Image (tube, rainbow, N blue to C red; front, top):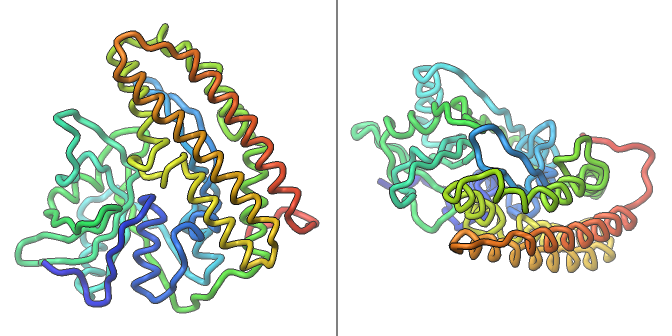
Amino acid sequence: MKPFAGFQHVETHHCVTGSLHHLYLYYDHTLSEDMLLGLGEGVGFVYWQQKGQPPFIGGRATPEPSLEELAGLRTGVQVTPICTSSGRKAEAALLERLEKDVPVMLQVDMGFLPYFDFKGTEYHFGGHVVVVCGYDAARRQVLIADRDADLHPVSLDDLAKARGSNFKPFPPHYKLYAVDFTHKRMPIADEINTAIRNQCERMLHPPISNLGLKGIRKAAQLLPAWQDNMSAEELKWALFNAYIFISPVGGTGGGTFRYMFSRFLAEAAALTDNPALTVCAEQFRAIGDAWEKIGVWCKAMSESSAPDLREGRTALLHVADLENAAWAHLYSVLPAHEAMVTP
């Protein structure tokens, strides 16, 4: 099975921005994946734990409207998430588009995609996003572009399971993204500055203690107690899960999205004619290095027979200090504004 004519497959960093990037390439709108992440206000921090789930340490923000919609608004692209509770309607909506030989972006549970190998462990993450870029009606198969270098044939039955998964915390709800590139354009400086400013605001002044800089410090305080509140197997998985969502393996681009954000700021410096952003870019690259060290440490502790988590607390508090300085500096070099605006 071949991809649709005109589809360009590239390796990407993050599933959401990577899938957007694939669509932007298809419609000849050549914005980098890093730029889409920054324009979509996708960088932040969250520490969260749901009952029965390992603690979640993540560097993504969840703005409203969504990253996908915000990136679209600031680049002249209409991105409309469409959800349903009906598997039949979901498949019909997908096939209607595929029969026109156009790629489609979907949210899925990666645990149901056969090309992932979880070494015999049942794993589910329903916040994964991919692009269906080919279709064989006779075989009832699709071709999926993910973050890696390969294109993956998947049956419509397996895809239906991935789209309709009920596993928490991010069930996909058969989400499909409708896109319209008719009025595509480059972002203007005000839009880039607004996107940066909003991410600074959320990190420096989060609404709750689980988010932003407060969230990093909360994670630091709670990490040593993981040993008291979990079994040995649960602790091992929680630490490995933290490593996954910090490192490039988990789709963050490395350094829990800070490397991608650094490259976004370097691009933004040229597009907004603000060379001060290049200094900020270097700060976030260094913060990415610090996060990577924490990720490596988490992996090592997950493999240890006698893990000691106190070192992790110190490392997280150090990163919190670095992030506080970097976000405050970034905010200070932005042009003055009257009010925070989200176009």
